[in-house]
Image (tube, rainbow, N blue to C red):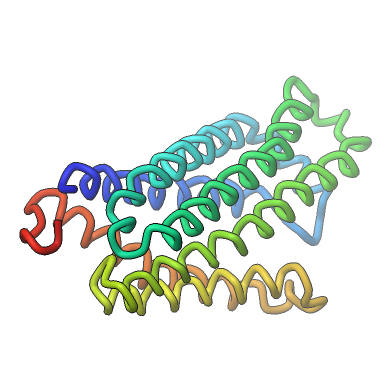
Length: 228
């Protein structure tokens, strides 16, 4: 169990690093949702940055897949059937995110070797590919939120993890579901986009980063006999 905890903790830490870099350092600097012509120009001008962001997302996807298999042994003793459901939801989230990444790859491929004077006809293609990436990932994050809720429930009800971490995971799950639901169904979402993003960041750090620290501690220090 110590080994699974260590691998899970390291994988989660790398997910934070690659995810924050790809989403907030790269995409946030390139995408202007109010001006797709400017966004297209950014993708062309900073094409190498887009490539690095895509690689970071792929790394995040890989480590998310690792967690599907390393978290399972840590939670199955609490409730095997619910653990299967939780693991399946995380796998579905990873599959959905992979499908969404095809949209980002299409943007990368479309903007390869494009000159600035030739970008006028690309805005529609870029917009559709970006919408595909964002929408599919948002739907996948709803599944991820439910996954976190089940992990939290397993911790609170069956002591898969400490109960306080379980509570934090439920809070994080609520943040993902609320933000994703608002993006999918709230017409005025972009008027409050930054507020929803802050909610996800705060609740995600509260729940997932706390779990990460606990996993790393158990990975290095080990479990008590009754915990193993």
